[in-house]
Image 1 (tube, one colour):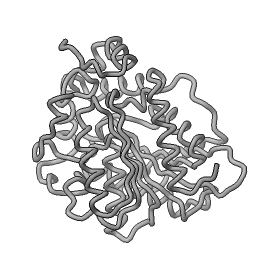
Image 2 (tube, one colour; image 1 turned 60 degrees about the horizontal axis):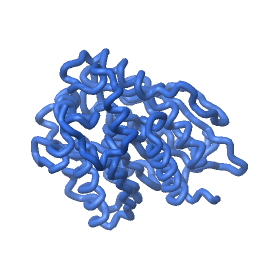
Image 3 (spheres, rainbow, N blue to C red; image 1 turned 135 degrees about the vertical axis):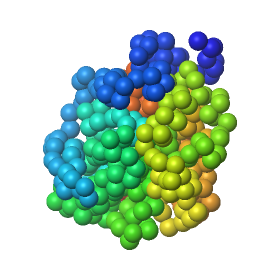
Length: 318
């Protein structure tokens, strides 16, 4: 094992040392099912905090039912804003259960109804299936916001990693398709760039030994999309020629994450296009540190920061 950067959060370094060998090797060495089980085991919170109400439903999607989990916070005055949230996991892993703890904390701290989306996963369902599921569910959340006790005028989209990819693409698609008028986009270490077309320094600097490895990144992309999708900006939002007219954005990155530089580049592109953009960088952290908040104190801080960004963008008082 090569020496890790001394700037790494000691808690993150200790966690990396403690992880079982089956968790962090390149995903190409694991079966799809084993990888899913391991990620769910690592991310699922044993004792998640309570919210006012949790409801599991299914809605009709473009190619079948889409499961949703809806978190309602306890607030004094309504209607509350709504966040359509899309989980990460390289488009191959991740689940409603794995992100249950995170969604609860976001709902409580942002005083926002969170609609967590269980889109279909690759390789069984490659691009654009998962993206279209996530778009349809976001559109449903906006259309049915009032039915959920939410405010149709204050609907945001967000996600982390692969979910951040979907969230960024949904913001673009909503503009292109005259879809829901989204108020904000929350992009947590989003995957927005095809490494085969643009190679960032962070791929080399953080490509091994920091939880997410570049072998895994490239393997995930191989499962998710076909070579013909390389120019599709719904698959790779950084490839979009025009990012103007999009909702305000919060982009969060981690210093020891191979996706660091593409997230920063996307924030810069949004800013250059005239999109109000807040860029939050956590230099000592690894990919997935927000989901790993049970182990990493800075993950809790980042959730609070994300919640504060949502409160500000969505006009939540207090």
